Image (tube, rainbow, N blue to C red; front, side, top):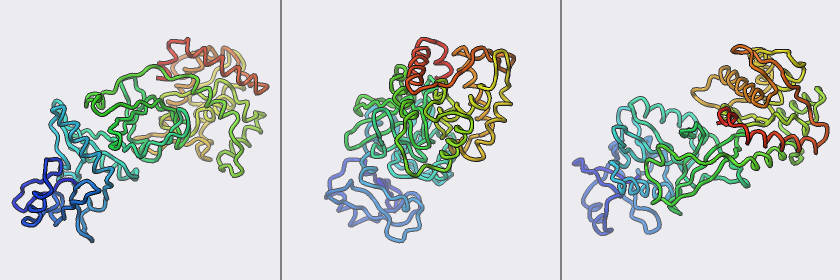
Length: 404
């Protein structure tokens, strides 16, 4: 940690300007205490790491169990100076006794307090939820900034997002999901924008890197909007869904899904072109959109003839068995109601098919078939249909309201 207090209550911060000889003299004359637990701490003045305070071995302080890497200490200090340079009132490692938490940074913008957590290591979802709820209980808005060391680009526009990182995503003014990273080694802010998840750990996203000095606190609190996502990334991904590499050990859920497809005379690589679209609720689902949308089409839409209708509740009933065998899975989130999410998911997809001209809405929860959806007969036809629908989506203004 970067702060401690003296026995008379004076706060000592490594964010202030100190000479090494001054700190050595202070260390020889004074005893440093942890602001959270009042136990003794030692001041470490090494030549390779950021100067910092540390608990002695066998300390029972809960904060001493969260070891801080040099990367984390450096980033926290840089973010502190980044805020002070903008004349933002900010304090480093303020202990909040009411909730027994100590944010990395506590700042005030306008009349609102923000707790900035710079998270560079793994964190359990339970611990994340506990800390987030703690701040919210006392009216503080938490802003989670992920260490740049956790940014994992797999290829092109595909990124790996793990565990608690999904929970730290926030919406911009256009309801698009984004993640915020900071790298102290390059002094850069890194933003993953327009995040579109397609598995438990993978997402399409647009990456933007900016030097620390070009970013303000307003850019973090109210991120800017960027142009629409490049459809070519989606088409490349859809080809990967149609023709994935062969894995000798597929998951049980994938084997069940493929078996179900063959039972319904659907070749896995020739799923309907109308399946595989990213919709707002997709963020809360681990299952790829091409899978759950194929499930809806095969169970509920393909069997219908023109002018036949189906209700949202009937589609939901048809999908329920796939939740039990985990072909359709939802992302863990403290505020998720999976039943409600499933209904919202179905409604969004029906509205998309309505935009494509396949369905017509009748009443609040019922849709009528206008144009039959057919399965591609060959791989080439599947690719062509994907391209055609991609062009339609780019030239249909209201589709972006559905996709957001």
